[in-house]
Length: 278
Image (cartoon, rainbow, N blue to C red; front, top):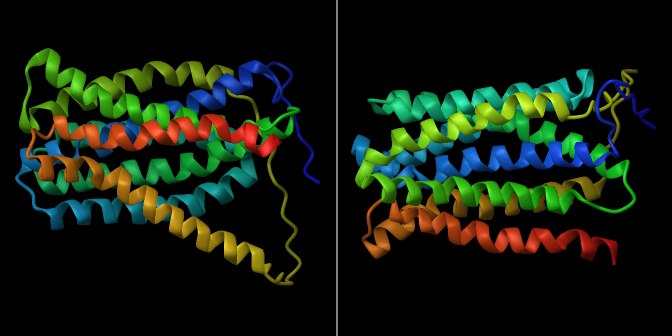
């Protein structure tokens, strides 16, 4: 069994502060991803892209996320999930800023690469911290952590509507102010998260040259994760574009598509822990 090692000067895994910290990690991550996904119709309009170019952008970001999940997971096991989750966040922030300023398509792809790589590492690491926080408490709490991620996506996508309405922006003009706004908010949260996020124990591995057989249930869970990832990823990445095209509305208004996805997710995840307890 992994021994939990606490930093005496920092918050303990079972404390309320630790819960707030992990919820904050999920919320900030979701906000940046929500802004990224919700702004795709506006980015398409600004750079005059077609659906193939958007698909390539998302594909590159997805490959970067897969690679970062492998690297980030191993690094989190070795040094603890806290530093990985905290220092992956600036990569996502840098990615959305690059997308915001991107004058040409290759620059936007570079931004997507940063977003994907940072999100892949942060996704694995913040969930690992969340698991240890949940283990230190009496009742399940992971579902509520994920609810904060969905709240974050709601805020990120909703910011598109707010900014476009306040400043009278249409088409691709909303991308830059949106990305700057979300980046500033995330940067303001980052030092707070550094201060309050608890230490998570490293996960020791024994290397003896013997390969362990992967249990059948692990393959089943992997297939379930692929199915879930396809459904959620498609909804997150294409809902705003779909609404924009079908309803023939301004790209900023199309962000309602992502808002409509994140709202029921938030409601369902908020109730998840109670169902697990029962």
